[in-house]
Structure formats: structure tokens, C-alpha cells
Image (cartoon, rainbow, N blue to C red; front, side, top):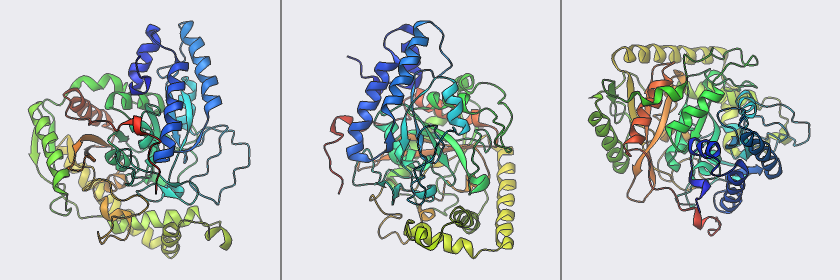
Length: 475
């Protein structure tokens, strides 16, 4: 019998259309998988099983009548516990947010999915307020890697990535303020896109301001394009949201890479030390792009690491989100978050505006860079997944998560579309991600290039074995 948890969203919808299986069957399979993997990887804050099955039955009725509500009717979806999901508490990984209340509003991306008949499996884990690049929190504990539960899933959308990788729903909503969909996608061997800022509306507004994006986390680029078509439409609650896209992203997938000008930067001009296994896997994928007809040039964008400016923006945002907390509540915070909030609280408006100046100059440089190159390709991360429950790899010398994520946060500062594509594994069998970046508003090019890799089987890796889910007890 066909394992429905192995199918993409595109394949599920096609199966519903042909009457080969129903949304109820797909939802039951996804919920069963979610319950099994929870013991091993801790991907969920909560599962909404009864509600999901009710939504699936309603979807099955629509499909029987030949009247689906939209492009993702009956497809199981998970929602990161940063985004509002009507009927479920949104606690953001924090013990400072009370569960009580009505919780009667959907975030814009969730609302668009609900309108098109998606089935919501539950809320996925996040570090507290999404503050770091790994997923552990005082509220929900440690989220672990599907390939090796002793290692991190990455973050801050780590639960979403682990769920997709292990078949607990083919579609997931994540958020990305400094790499938070791309980091866990690279560590967990899935696809994730941080769209151009404003392409997917966000409400309530993030304390991290215009660094914060909402993005699809999926099995492949085709599913991401499908999801982006659904959620990438305006919402009046987000004043910074973009207008409608020029056309469906699903229609742009087939363009291929022939003739595209691709800049390949293996280390951002020698600024980043990349593990040999990561470098080799990324280079092989880049060579495949060249074989598909792209004009590949090994060159680097001309910018110095903007980490200090990013820290100013990030730490002050963290201070703002916790500003209302009293002394007792502050003691409940993740110690690392409490530390950066203290730093952020001491930053002045002039510090913040100086960081904005750095950001604007970085954006100018990347704008000029893309006059010459359609795409920039880099490793998504310089390393593969490290020990779970720690912010930085032991012995690395890094003090904060940004020390090992130098390829991701610059493109939150510039608001460009950027994706992580799985392109192989290292010697330990851990996934490696390749990052594809395009100029603002050219999400279509990122998806086209990623899809071209998937079609030639350069992207994608052996999925983790879900049969072992539940057999490993985290330490």
C-alpha cells in the first residue's frame, strides 16, 4: 500500500483529483507519523488531531463533489508556533505567555491556507521568540535532527523542518529573521525559501522588524512554489506587504537555468571557513548548474561581514519584545535570550540608525551585484548539524549562533529571496544545503534554479528513516 507520508503536496492534490485516496487518509497518516516522531525529535508544541480530521472530512466532501476550495485543499500543513493559528495558543516557545484567551485570529499566511482548504496538523517548535539558530526553549525543550537525534535540527524553524523531513505533513510555515527557515532546512535535508520581504504578509508585526520573513518549508521547490502562490498575496493587516505577484510561481518553475548568470561564492571571499564535506557537495551541485547551461563564474559579492550591524538590529528587537516583562518573568527566559536583551536595551537610537546605514549600503552593493549576475550561490551553512541543546558547536570559539551562520543573515538585511536546497551529505551522513540568492522580487529565479536541480536529482538526499521514529530516547 502506498505510504501517503512520502508524497509531496503536488502529488497529494493529484491523488485527490483522481480519487486514488482521500484527505482523510492522508491526514490520518500524517498525524500518525507526527505522533511517532514526537518521541524522537520533539517537533511539535501541540497536535490538533481532532480539528485536523474534521477539516480533512470537509475537504473529502468537497473533492467528492468536484469543488475543492483551492490549490491545497486537503493537504496537511504545520504552523510554526510564532504564527497565529485560530483555536490554538501561540506561545512562541516562552513560559512568559499565558495559554488562556480566545486565540481567535489567524496570521495572514494561515488565513490564506484556511481559505483554500488546508488541513492544520498542529504547531511546531521554536526557540523562545525565535531568537536563535537552533531550536530549544524553556517551554518545549530540545528539538532534534531527523538524521541523528543527538544533533540539532537547527532553528529557529527547527520543528517545522524535522516534521517535513520525517513525513509529518509536506507543507510547513516557518519564519526567517536571520536564517531561520534556511538553517534548519540545510541541517534536516529539506527545501526552504525566504521570500522577498513583504511577499508573504506578516501580522502581528515582528519585534525584529523588516528582518523577519514568513516562508515555505517543503520537500522540494515545486511544493514551495505551490505554497507561495497561496500565501504570497496581500493582507491589509501588514502595511509593508507587497502587491500581487506578477504571475504564479508554479508556472515559472519550468524555465530552467540555461543562460542564467550565476555567481558562485564558496566562502564569501575567504571570510568563511567551510567544512570540506560541505564545500565538496556544494561545488558538485554548482558544476551541475553549469552542465544545465548556466554561465557560472566563481566570484564574491563585495561586502564585509555585517554581523555587528545585524546584532544591533537583532538584540534591540529582542529587548523590545521582552520590554514589558517584570523581574520574575525575566527569570523564566532562556538565559541566552536574557543576555542579548540586556545588550539590546543598552543600545541607543543612534546605534540603531548606524546599523540601518550599514544595511542600506549592503542593499546597494547587492543591487549592483545583481546587475551583473542573476543568481548568487553559496553554501547555506559552512557546517553540518552539531550537538543538540547548544547554541554553538563545542570548541568552535563562537559566542552566539551568528558565528556559524555567516551565509544567511546578510540576506535578511537586504530583504532578498534566498533558499536552501539539499545537495548531498557529508562523511557522517548529515545533510548539506546550498543557498541560492536572487535580487529582490526575483523569487521566481530562485525557485527555477532549485527546481532544475531537483529535476536532475542533484538536489535531494536520502530521507531519514521514519521506521525508527520513537525508538530513540533523547538524552
